[in-house]
Length: 115
Length: 109
Image 1 (tube, each protein chain N blue to C red):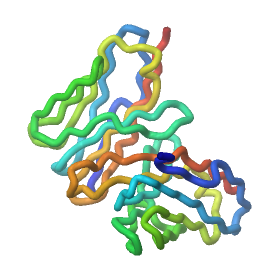
Image 2 (tube, rainbow over the protein chains, first blue to last red; image 1 turned 120 degrees about the horizontal axis):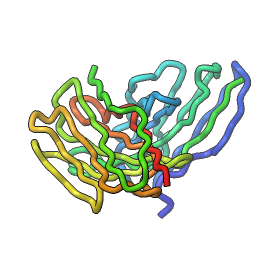
Image 3 (tube, rainbow over the protein chains, first blue to last red; image 1 turned 90 degrees about the horizontal axis):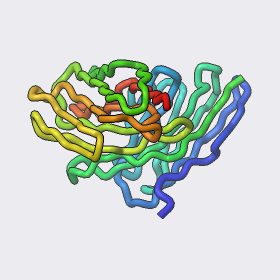
Image 4 (cartoon, helix red, strand yellow; image 1 turned 180 degrees about the horizontal axis):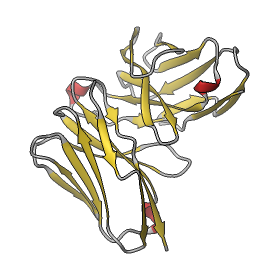
């Protein structure tokens, strides 16, 4: 089991460029999440998905879009990158809360710099 | 919206000293989780507390959930250099999991 994987690991963008971050999990989890982590700010939820074909906004969704076309994949898109989006991005997945097992499994992260 | 506050933000201890981090929610939680993130790593799940007043232990780590299910604490006895990292609490209420900002623990050998 690879768990949760993220590609790419590092990326440098220029302001206005676009990119897609890919998250994949092999644990058959229903729920998937995208977070950003900035110094002193903890983990802030961008978007999440409770199942294939569904997405919902989190705490800081502006400037990002997501898609969950397949259960195992969750994509995070930046249409027009801004320096304020410089951050470390973590993807996570979990079973649905109704199972009682709701620990989140995190990927290794993507370090994005926007110049 | 739901907020989770965590204190202190930083803690520096001598190896062998005890360490405690506290977590407070603005709303009643259905459960609370604790995660550890090593420097340069990703958050890793430690434990989940569900019941009011619950206390759980993992070796030198003791986790408590308050009677009102709005606060929690993590206590580490006799810290070791392997305890270095940032400890996050995360509360589950009516919204998806909300993380505190974390407590960064440094251990001086």
